[in-house]
Length: 260
Image 1 (tube, rainbow, N blue to C red):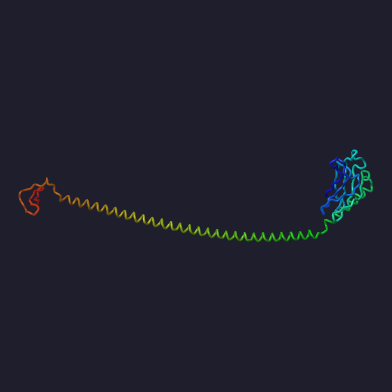
Image 2 (spheres, rainbow, N blue to C red):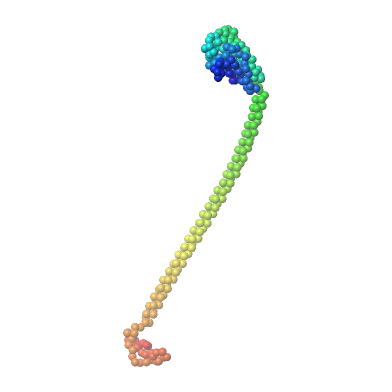
């Protein structure tokens, strides 16, 4: 609630106005309060809500045109009665002396009790608009919750499908690895067999080479027995015969007669 009262204009003259803002109609309403309340400046202004339909304006201190506000107008309490349309009526006004009277105290207690009762009734009163809004909010939240649960279930299904795909892929990878290991083992086994076969062939080739070398040595040795050094042969004049290319004569080799 917004209330303005008194003040000073640009000419430094004290104003004598009191206004309240109608929050329903969004307009200002001028209040017909006593001059002792509105005609002052530099004062303190407070609004105390006693009940939904009763407001007290408390004005304290300040100054008027001829000096500070004096007793009994230093502190003033003005009662405002509000209606359902945001309008208000000015009620009783109490100065500093009246606020100490039994009438003020009794009215203050009555207003407190009335305000407490009204506030309690307003609090306990079911409001159709609020209930409808609450029900609509609950329905909206339930729909959102169902949608979230559905999304969660779909996410779980997607996660399960992805997990199954990953397991299938892992099984396929494991099978591929096993097949590669088996093929590598076969290659290694085949390679060992080929190496063993080559080693055996090398052994056979070496053996054949040794045999050939041995036969060649024996052949050379056998040929050496039939080789005759010309210095060891002494020719004699006896001829054994004549051919188209040479004459065959008799020679003496180590005491033996040989044809040369």
